[in-house]
Image (cartoon, rainbow, N blue to C red; front, side, top):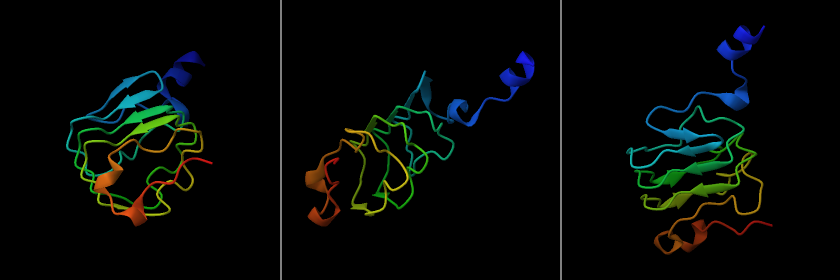
Length: 115
């Protein structure tokens, strides 16, 4: 039974995405020229750093399933547009919204503060 469990990790214990480094429930996908959020992130992920990549926009649903995310770093990207639904079905915790230079984002796309 233990061998089967080790060979079949649960959804909250997925392998680290390619070109990322994982440390427990923290995922570092930095300086890897990502143009999109990695698709195979663990739902149990509590921290995600996508700093120094090539993200140009945040689209609806990109963070779906990341309900345990406590912090998210998106600074040093090229984010020009943020869909109003980008965080629907994703981060709910206080402080989960991205840290990036919002003065480079048009005012209508600024991330609202957490409730």
